[in-house]
Image (tube, rainbow, N blue to C red; front, side, top):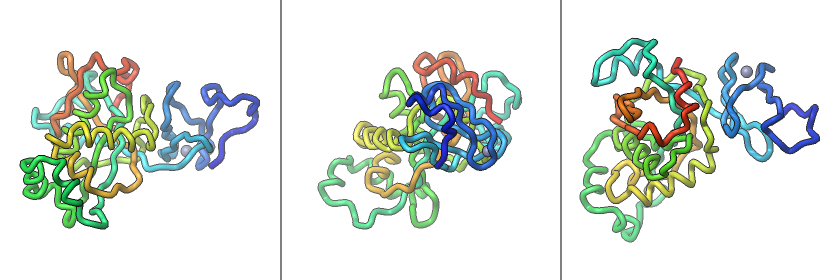
Length: 241
Ligand SMILES: [Zn+2]
């Protein structure tokens, strides 16, 4: 992919102006961000060593989210609602059945939950693994959020063009962190244990609405929550569309 190369005397990406290869509009994101979405044409891009790579970026449709929260609808302009970027990997059945050794790493109770929950049935529905695309002070919190949302498999209705501000993990980093989350949570999370057994398709970025409730950020549809103090305050400026 291309990048704008008129001031290419420096390797610093921070000072470089990135333009959308699709429509030519300027791409805007915060310092340290790895994913950019074009506000004009809604194409998503990831910044890698060789420039911009196009990717799928969507966000959870706010109207759907407000209707589907168990807590009931809130006002769409509610200032407590923020959009947090997540990587979402679609899972595919493995080429070969997991070995006895692989299966033995997952407790029998968790294996039972995988086989009994229809939401994990890869032959009849799309199943996804999620990982925060933003940093948390404590990585364990990110892994717990990954487990909570992967276990519940919300059937989000999506719109194009995720708000990508704060997406500081690139897709490769996210894939490695997802592996770590599988190891950390597979003893208790059926969704991440299943992820450990599956192949993954290239991930997409999705913006997920959360609500500030006391000292936490809560995603009401899946019940995912994160300690507010563990995330970069700049993420709280992300308003969902
Ligand atoms: Zn564009």
